[in-house]
Image 1 (tube, helix red, strand yellow):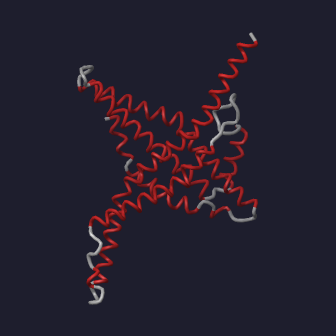
Image 2 (spheres, one colour; image 1 turned 120 degrees about the vertical axis):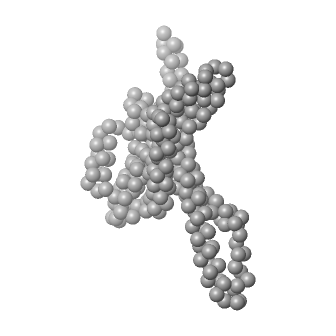
Image 3 (spheres, rainbow, N blue to C red; image 1 turned 60 degrees about the vertical axis):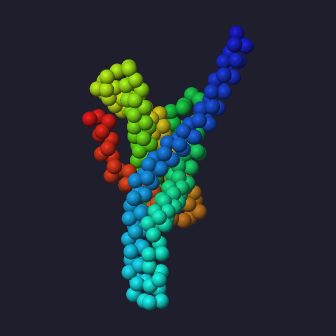
Length: 252
């Protein structure tokens, strides 16, 4: 009997270690996919900005004979490449600020796996947010929620399209396949957010609070903590929110 219990303990410990490694990676991947989706949306806006700057520069260069030969040196191909590089750098920077902290997620113990730390700590954490709502404490959980939602939507679209194609292979009529695909796509959003989404948001709040408290201990103002990360991530989150109406396509 003792041997059986020992073996079960070892198996439980193994799966506990697996979960401890899998969950942070899953949260990181979830947020990174959402950031990538947002960067794709912002790509066109970056290209429009590059085009506008190029047109402005050409207008100034054309005013003088010495610099007139430089007009149109940057063509459409170069502008597209510049815009893509800027969008990629933007995406990677937001990943560093928002997605990488998700790797620090950990659970209190195997009997209390619902939170990344104990319940009484959550009350203290939210109390500090209410008492001192610094920009990082407010922005990071918000943008993480948006990115997690964008990633869940991307997963749902993948499930929907894959299932729709698979069911039409002599399994169901196109009408039935469409309904089933949308139902499972909507279910995928719920499952992703229920298993990973809320954890990502709470981990973002935990990280933001820790960063602010570390600055307070140094007798410095926490209001500028994480400023660059918030400034870079917020516009991408807004771009993703502006496309949120596409989510309704799963239910139409």
